[in-house]
Length: 282
Image (cartoon, rainbow, N blue to C red):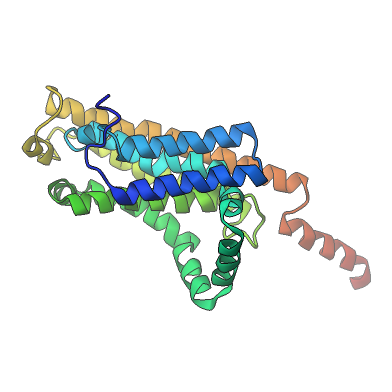
């Protein structure tokens, strides 16, 4: 039962988790998503809970390779599953009617649109998605996070929000515009973002020195050779993370094909106008 108990209790996480779950359950009464979408949402939510609010967090703070598993869950797999369930409409339906009216007014306000445009700028989101992985891999930054619980939590939350924002853009089912990325860039983006991660994973994997002695200072959870644990952590960054991003790219490709079949890609409209004008030009 100790695996269910949180290593470090967090009211912030618990309130956000329960609030999101309640909204989703309320929303399914009005707009029922498919069974596969519901499974995807709840599986992602369970992974968030497991990685951040169970005893697993203890091992993540005392073994490098367990920490890498936690980061892959928070930054890659759990956000991908939640966003792939397309929960936005369901969560909105879960709000009370008055709250939905307030939300619409807030979304129409200039300050909200300015912040929204900045935080969901495709370039900013994509660069931060990669940068956060690399920054927290710097040994000095890893040491700070392990020695200060506030920085540790900030690290984990930054991975969560970065992952959600990135996959929200990549898995957008709308054409561009109003989607913030073109369909082709959505497919290409995971291939670009996985490259620096693969390189970083390879560097960690083949390193012959202990890059993160902070785990020795904190006390290791397993009696394992230091370099063996580091090698496993590097492989986790290298292979599973790349596989998850490849799956995300394939999901984006499926949306691209769906938009193409339905004739919703803007390029088709442009081509059609050019064809119609061609006889008149002659």
